[in-house]
Length: 160
Image: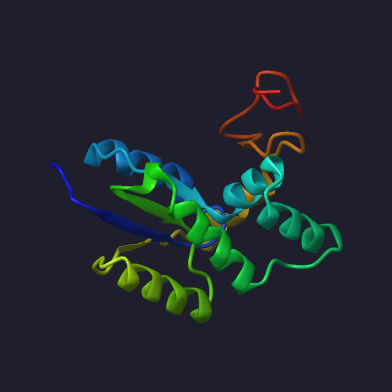
């Protein structure tokens, strides 16, 4: 099945499997659009040393949360890349009303329709189990789970 343009929004609490389900969904639909999470987007911008990355790093380094305006500017820059020419999947964005209104305006300015919205509902006890076993590599940001997605070497990321 070929789409002209596809925007998918995946919602759910931390640990519900948005990243995993997003990847499987894109494979199942046979679409070559990127899956974009705000965390990965922030890490990429910071690692690349872009102006938005420098601004994000300063906020995060001071212990602050990146505000809606900065996240929205990061998203706008990210979806302007050529790999988003046929669409994109957003993992956990928008998180606030301001972000939702921004996304609606962005899609409207680009002449795009409404996104497909998918909410992942997972029981609280399952989420808690997943979260307490979740780890993230401090060097590259890769997520792993010490129970279900163990690294080959304990306490070390497989990529690093």
